[in-house]
Amino acid sequence: MASQPPVTMGFQDECREIHDACSQPRRLGLLLAHRTPSERQQIRAAYRATFGEDLAGRLHETLMANKDNELCKLLYLWTLEPAERDAIMAREAVEGGATVAGYRALVEVFTRREQNQLFFTKQAYLARFRRNLEQDMVTEPSHPYQRTRALASHCSSVLYCEFVNSLLTLLFC
Image 1: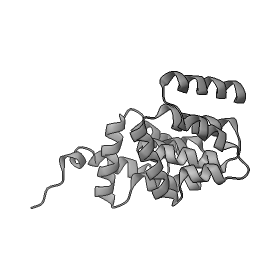
Image 2 (image 1 turned 90 degrees about the horizontal axis):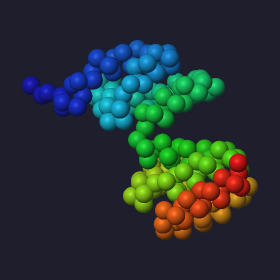
Image 3 (image 1 turned 60 degrees about the horizontal axis):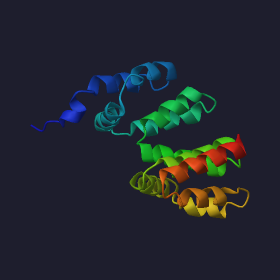
């Protein structure tokens, strides 16, 4: 008799509740709000083991049905790994035009993450969108992201990163 891994055993009941609540964003929020990032990832693994589908994918379907519902978007992003979340935020910033929020998202990704985290974000971007993040920023004709990227990529010290953040705050706020 095969047993399930202990990671998924503890969250099966929660996964059933989450599955039943997928069309009810408020209820989903109540079920997931008090969870730590580790618990959310364990729930995601248990959900896949129980229902054979990814919880983030299921929440993405709910998001697509409720595009104007910010809670749906929050719950979807909340279930993702940090690198996946950063990749999605970066893509939205690149696609969304030259906005203050877009610049802030890109500056956050490129200046506040350690190099290994940034590596995983770029890999997640490539895997999800089949495109290179840096290349998208450089080749996007209507956006001056290249300057933001150039500044952020040369951050060699915490003081310089703080300087770049201050400068961008003055320019775009």
